[in-house]
Image (tube, rainbow, N blue to C red; front, top):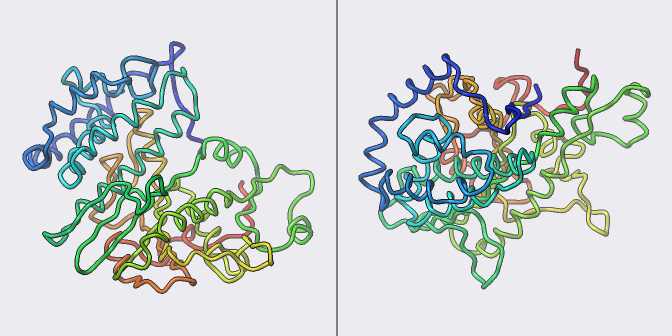
Length: 368
């Protein structure tokens, strides 16, 4: 289903519906025990962060999230805004200054009324926040260092976070694609090519010549890997190094899985469609694995004031009691990093049919 914004003529988000308000109350009730913990341990209290939000550019110019944050500024609940605040405070516990940095980043993406690329960028920032929060909230050794966007050289490329202790040097990069236009096309077209599994001539012979076709969304995944390799390689020689790229997608998780692991073209296989000048598959030795999450649609639903699905009660909720929906881990054939540690940290497993049909690579899809 195509996830496009629902706005009134004046650009505002529609008011809360009754059933959503019940969802908000339920979510906040479940959070009451968690919020004081974040507030007590972090170097920033919730009221202080709300004050920073109130004084930010979110309320100076037109902003997609001004409606949501206006609720908390005036003491009212809002699922999206409350989730952002709680996640920021939890990250603040481990990385002082992180909360204000996130709010400043969110606030800087605005000023253009109803500009869809801005909304997509905001969703991507929240996807990053969700993953960083999960990693930082794990139980780590007391001597662990938590670094935000570090680089070994001045002006060098930097991953989202790096964690260092005597047993691990973990670098994490989080990426989410711009999907609104792709979702529109995918919803409209009856046929979809999920991967570059054969040459163009063969693929053309398998599809209807006069029917609109949705093409693979694999170039962003390729770009994500290139970026992660550039950011990780400076840390790769350190002992016990793990480099993990987390890709946050929507509910159609077979798309990135096919791009990464299809045996005829997957970016992490020896038959990758991404070749160098000599016709050899480009490898990413500093990326130990890619973790793929189906979660962007949850964040979009929260933006639109729609109830969340699949048992999720928090739009930035990484883990669930049931483990559903599963998180997929695609190991990198060109790397020799210990996958078991990555599986444990990110609660992800190699995708297979037992997880659901959408967790296997695809070639052609016909929508009815």
